[in-house]
Amino acid sequence: MEKIKNILQEIIDLEGSAMDFFFTNNPECFDKSKPDWLYPRLVAFFQSRPHNDKIDELLNEMSIELSAVIGDNIFSELTIIDKSKSIDDAFVEAFILKLTKNESKEYKFQQLKSPYKTKGYSLALKSVDKWVLQNLTMEFGETEHPYILAELTNCYMLSSSFLDAFQYLYRAAKQLTTYPHKYWNSEYGMMGAANVYRHLFILVTDVEMKLRIFKLYYLHLTRLINITKDKLILSNSYSNRAFMCRDSLSLYALPFIGINPDLLYISDLWYAHNCGQPEVPAVMTMDFYKMSLTMYQNASIYVNNTGGYKEIEDRTYGEIVEAKNFQSIEIAIEYLKQFKDSNCSINRKELNKIFQDFEKECRFDFVKFKNRVLKFKN
Image 1: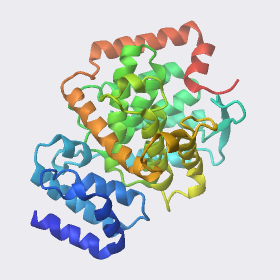
Image 2: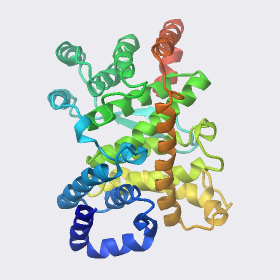
Image 3: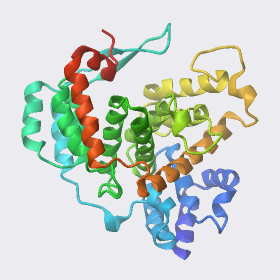
C-alpha cells in the first residue's frame, strides 16, 4: 500500500486543487473496507479533465499496484488491465494504418431515421472503395482478431454486402460470447468486442437473446471505458452506452430494482461530451451535452413544461452525473458475474442459430432487412 500512497501523493503534487475537489466529493474512496473504489473513480475524474500524460502514467502504475493488492477481485477484473494476461496484438496497427489511408477523404452524409418530428439526424460516413476493401480482405481477412473482423464487418454492412459481413461478424463473435476470452486484457480486443456486440444488438430480434446481448454489450463497453486512453474511443463508448439505455429493453435488462435508465443516459452523455476534450473538439460532442440537459430538464427527449428530473430528483444535475457514472460500474460488475456463471453467455449452437436467422431474413426480403439494420432514410 505504501507504493499506492506515494503514487497518490505524486498526483496531488501535480493536480493539487483538482485533487482537493476529488477528496471532498469522493470520501468513500478512502474507506479501508473499499480498496477497489479509488482507481475507477480517479480514472473517471481525470477523463473529464484536460489530458495529462504524467497523470496517465501514474494511474497506470496505480492499476498495477492495486491489481497486486486486491488480487482476484471482480472489481479489478473489470477496471484494470492484467498485464500477465495481455496478448501481443500490435499487428492490428498495420490494419488500422491501411484502412485509414484508404478511406475516402470526404465524408458522405447519410440521413438517418429520427425519433424527432422537427429535427433530423445525418451520419458522417467515410467509405472504402470496393477494390480497396477486396485488397484489405485478401491481406487481413484470415486474421482472427475481433478488431479487424469487426471493422471488415462495418465496411461490408455499410456497402449492404450483408452475407459477406455475416462471415466476419460470426468469426469475431464466436471468440467473445463465452467466458473467459483472451481479448479481455487487450484494448484493441475490447474495441473489437464493443463493435461486434453493437452489430449483434442491432441485428438480433429475438427478445430473450437480445436481453443477453444487451448485458454483454454494456459489460464490454464499460470495460473499454475503464481501460482506453483514446479520447475519441472514450467519447464514442460513453455515447453508445447512453443510447443503449434509451432502448425499451433496458427496463428489463438492468439488474437491480429501481434503476432509472434515463439517469444513466444523462450521465453517460455528459461524459461523452466532456471526457474527450481537448483532443476531441467540444463542438463535435455538443449535441451529447444538449441531449443530456434536455433529458434532465424534461424527463424526455422532447422539450416540455413538466420540470423534468430537475423537479423529480432531490439531487443536482452534477450529482446525478457522478452517481450514475459509478452505478454503471456496479451494473457491469453484475453482468460480469452473470457472464462468468454462463447466465448471459451465448454458446456455439445458439450463435449458429442467430446467424442462420440473419441469413434467412436477409434473403427473404433484402430491402426490408437493409432498412431495419442500417436505419437510413430511403
